[in-house]
Length: 208
Image (tube, rainbow, N blue to C red; front, top):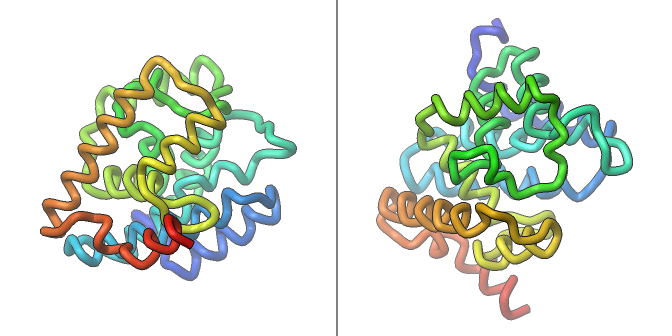
């Protein structure tokens, strides 16, 4: 039964994203697809479950389905969590909450849509303070910082892209430090610099 599953199959995850893209078309959909491919590649190199990594990346921003003209009833983090919880996919619901917080503090959110209710903010804050991240939480946080709507890029380029869109915030440096720690963590697991897994894509992004 679906309710017994932690995450959907690739086929169902793609179907959910297709539905969501019709509700709110935008570059976020291509970003999710690139995060999914990035996570799958790293998972294979680290002996993690590549299918779980793929669907976690594909649906990490699924909460944007509820947006219209840049606005929604709540932030995409909580909207995605609610949608995945309703579908019985607890692993994906968790990823929806954790992917935006490599630095484990709700004040470190780097976007501009944190318009949750007080109750929702309290829930997310409590979840972050009481949760120990596992390798799938960390993997999607890292993959989210390696993928744009256009493709794979260096973390540094992605970080600058976010700052240019949302500005430098109180916890920006802490977020960056946490993200570089993720890169070191997975590079050690893979026994190679993570960038080596995407050498061709990164060369193309920088030089072409």
